[in-house]
Image 1: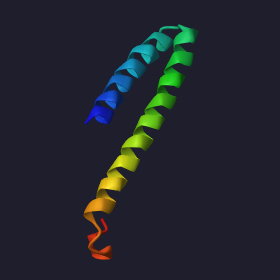
Image 2: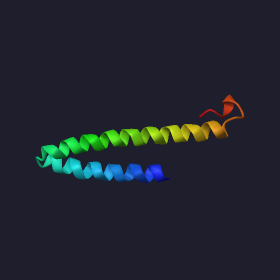
Image 3: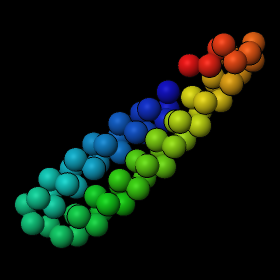
Image 4: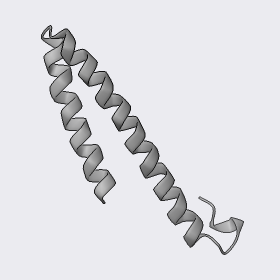
Length: 66
């Protein structure tokens, strides 16, 4: 569940920086883009984790495929 918490925190950071960017702070735009990259990495980690669990649980055959 730690990855989900990390993702939630990153989304909150993005919202905060994006709001600053919308008010005209150009540096906040750079920070918002960096946070988006971090979100992308965290999402990929979550995807890999989910796929790993599915493979462990689905060793009974292709009918377990979702």
